[in-house]
Image 1 (spheres, rainbow, N blue to C red):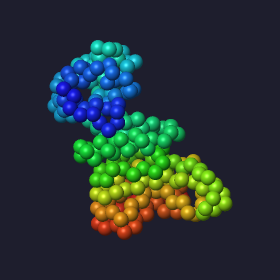
Image 2: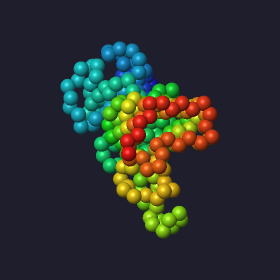
Image 3: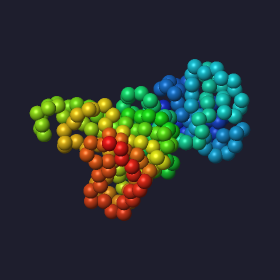
Image 4: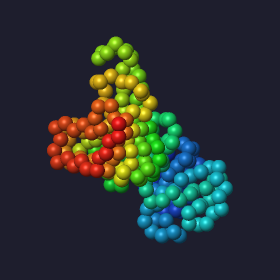
Length: 238
């Protein structure tokens, strides 16, 4: 039977493949659905992630592709329930994925899995992932911090910008394994009041590892009043 619904409305947790195939059409109406199973029967034990594609007619094999009675296929995506793509992150497109990243982080915080970036390019505005999560990315991951103009006024007479920042809470680890954070993805000129990169304030046990920063305007990493913080493998380029 279905045992839980993830934070993202389009993701459902089930026990077995048979439970996945028994999902109602109403449960599959919110677009692609990632299903995390506790037992994959034919292809082994342990958790797995399946993606529902209503248009697919791929050949079924009772292992990685399953036919759904209402049409379409469930396709095995691996064992990464925290993969940001499964929550609607839009890779390689200029679109704000912050809502999807928040959903992935919330689920990771509740289950202990990691938030996983599978080596693609993502845009986000200010992202404050749930405290205590582990965030990892493949080496070719690029996170572009999306900035946008707000009304003119203080602190300058020119249009100011809300600048994308990754804001880390207590007991959070971010390791991109050599991946990149692009601090200025779409704004060529901003005021000196702006800062883009990773920020953590008043926190403890934060770890930031193996990140390349590009186009940083002021700082790549800003730490204030933090304790037991680890920063290593940081590189900056312009």
